[in-house]
Image (tube, rainbow, N blue to C red; front, side, top):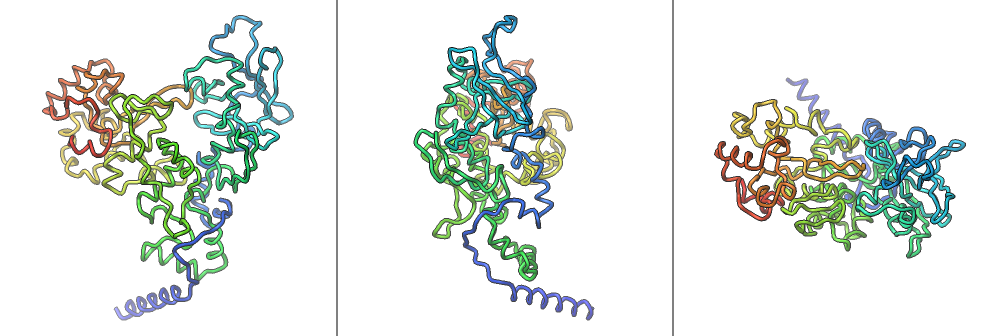
Length: 493
């Protein structure tokens, strides 16, 4: 026992000595960006996960590895064109030449084409957008994109807005301000975008970024002071390690969302994924970076997460709202979480379920789909349901309908980004089927999880099933779905 006591005293004195000899590091700081490659010199495990992530690869130089569209004599025809007519010319042609990639658009009222060199490619999982560099510095978005599931080119914006397609319209799509990619979209596809100058029409752009793609510093803040503090200073590194392990502190001169309040931590995600905001908030979101303002207050977007009203029946592309008041568009996915009880009454965060470094992967096995693991994750809090789960689900354990996802995260968010409309899961996580509302408004205006699985059954059948299970309290005659936000959730337990 004496030897152990001596060892503990020695260890305590060693730790105290390390902590006392480290360099001081203020909690409030302002730093400069250095790029993810520098981060990877020490944090190589997280760096390797990030290197294969969609965040890293969202924007790239064109190459055989990055281009997923068919540029081997590819082409695009309008839906109204008769492909049997061999005289029909494609409005757009795609091809390679000398290792470079090109898209050529048919000129208005002419049979010839104007060629555009592809200088950047955006996306690769669902669709791919192509950018061309203009003389004024603008990276211009070309109007034809590649659909990965369809394995063909398509006019993305025409399909989103359900507008007529024509040669004139393709050229018109390259005129709006938001077609200047590096002045509009690049905020969420680059790290530390700096706009030095531009003109009001977005035809001139003098911009730069630390790195293309979503790098480490987009989430952790600029890192040069962190690197200076750690590199070549083993005492500082040891002291930082002890601080984090023993006292739960964050590393010096860097932002770690896990050590911050929930609202600030999720501002990092909301900045790009929280699209359902007022237009007047766009500059705040676009210019956001993790860290401190000039008064030492952490930059926080959470007051605006659920500020814009969910107007029932809103039809604006990507941020649509169901007539029953629930989020419908894919751009409201984060909103569906921010409105939920799980956000407002617990400390859940995006990276509770999603791997923060490889955002395509789950934080732990099976967590992003209906599995025993995802059920157990829910039951860790909802322990009262763990003893007799079939009394709660009314479905056989291990079968469809017995998983928390099936009823409480139904697929009612419309995803059209790849040209193949389909529904993905709501992130409200509190949704309880109310087929009575579906009958009142129509299933096309108020979908429910029962019909999502039992598509061959009627709404009346679902109503009778809930009655048979003594779940009449969920059959509420209302004009708006109770699970559209956390306040209305409380009515329906």
